[in-house]
Image (cartoon, rainbow, N blue to C red):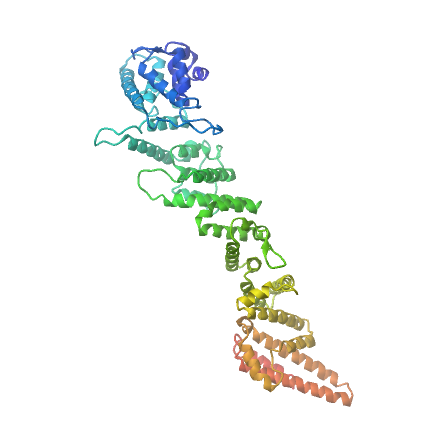
Length: 611
């Protein structure tokens, strides 16, 4: 302290008359009462004449000795510089916030001394000794009579050089306002302290980041959560360059003045990725300690938004920054919000859909149908995980990501929902006219085939058991029918007309004779709506297959023997009969989405081609 004081105040002041005052000032500036006690013991002369710069009033030495006794073996009067001490802090009967009566008496005496020194400084026409400035500053700090950052007699002293000096002086002064209540009817000292801290926070907010950041052009934020929204990509504004301090030049004064929400929001916004990391972890510590993450003020404004939303926004933003490199770590951070109710599940669903790390997050399906090795299982019950996956699948569907939805539904065990999804997609691409639609059709057919191979192969009954338990076996039957219909349309596209007709005949969807007409019409009404909506395509493709088979057979019959011709004629007649039945059947079932009479016109044309 002596060396530092000599550098700052000058060796002439430190070593000359009254040289203890600069050293004493910087001991108090460090918060080290033990060092201040050593300075008095080594350099101070106890005396009652305040006008003698070489003397220290007994009240000053008494108060410093009391502060040193309060500090004991700690680094400062406020506590240790780090938390590495294995022992628990000793209970204190008195502190800076609750001083003893002896300390209060000493402060009152020192306050009178300060007023005398201040009067002498302001009224003196001659040049003051340099050490008088340090004497006045020491008396102001020890008495708590005035903040040295705002004392008029010290305005040109240069003792408050940095932001840290200003904050320390202001908070030291506020700390001395927390004593016992003042006279009746007056404002309590506790309220004065609160008002002083609130005023400090208001000033720091008003000055804004440009006052503290040497090279920062960021504007202040009207709301703390707006800054984090901007950092997480919810705001369209352009980001400024990261200031040299990484945001701490402004965040530190905000934290010191208990503007926690604004400080953390600014740090997360201005400090880039590192700032977001630091702000999130400071918020985590505060939340763990039960400290509210809001801005201290006296105006009674609603702080609920900062308290309830800033912390989750910081955590979710930081989690999002990790998810590309480590989805598991991103999940771990989200779980800090486990008390946030539906928010945590919504964020987990977002993480699932954005990373698509389904196997890491949700595990895989074993041969017995159970789901294993899921990171989510460490934090939620099996039922909760299944619900999260199902809800994520619904969100994927709304976002147009049907493939992701299907995979999530498999993992959730919601097989009825899965079949509804696959059936709808398969039905949508039964008939395609573009390469893009054909690719989608092929994707869903391959996905459905793979699902069938993995989960419906012989010996695996968990899917069927689930559908049966839910009364949804019809979904499985629709799935099988749609898979066969895709093969049917593929054969038609490849002009494999006989193979296509044989498959359609085996599916038993169409009447083979008049006696089956009523049964087939009733069976059609029982089909799933997704099939009924596209059934006019099935009718037209079947009629087209019949027509091609008829033409080929008729052409081949022109060159056969007389005996074979009778068989050909018989077969041609049979094909005509099936075509006639198909036309009647199409009219009886009231085909939906058939383009009014277009389907019937086309059917009639194809039937005429077979006459």
